[in-house]
Picture 1 (cartoon, one colour):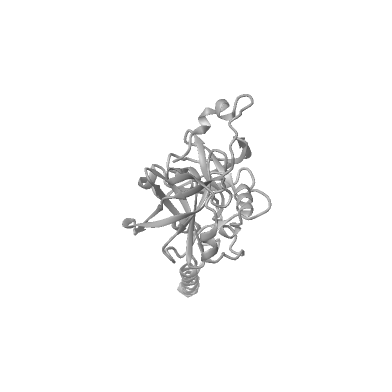
Picture 2 (picture 1 turned 60 degrees about the vertical axis):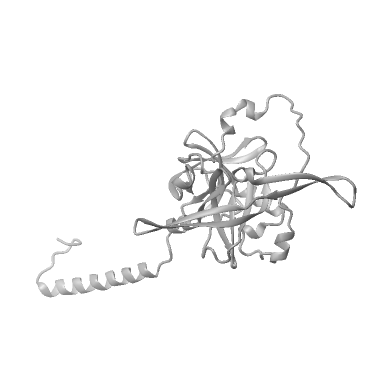
Length: 299
């Protein structure tokens, strides 16, 4: 019995074999024409960040012939240098913020074998620190056309649904764990910690994963992994927070390909960081005192 029908004689079988041959040829041709699947795209968009003694994760994007990288600010904070100077125009004091260069590292696997490691120099375009800011940073790779593709961001008005399956690709333990692929679930929305909104994911994470992307199964980036407790309680900066910050500082082009990339000269004129006064006065216990286990970064 085949497909619920009894075949009598070789003639009928010939037609079946011919039909199946055509179907198989069509399927093979279609498979060859398909673009890279979601897994390959996410792996190609992931990188390891080396910033002095710190190592974390990043996500590559492409705008024209230029590649940028999103990562967590605390991954690169040791490269930050601040000096106080006198403004010659006003006579007042001001801060000048500079950063040492960052190394963006990737590796290539062919037929299950590691065949190449690349380390590219990147500059910090925008930075918002982890203590009183957003814990977000945008880097620009100096080499043109370094990568041919990049991440696609979730730009819907409503956040993803709790229970959605998610994927994380990061660098647990630094470059040793480069491009580790794990899956999990979106566990909760809008956790509040240190007056900032985070979404919670249930996914295996370790030190070095800070700055990595969390994605829906269709490959859209929904947030950046930055904090965790244990190996599976992880907090991400959600897209709605990343979008809000990007809009405020005019870098929405780093999320939405429909928005025009500014000219190179305009990028160079952008302030790398907005420095604000920080009040040390606290009323009552801080959330760090209430939840000290959440102080742990994932780098």
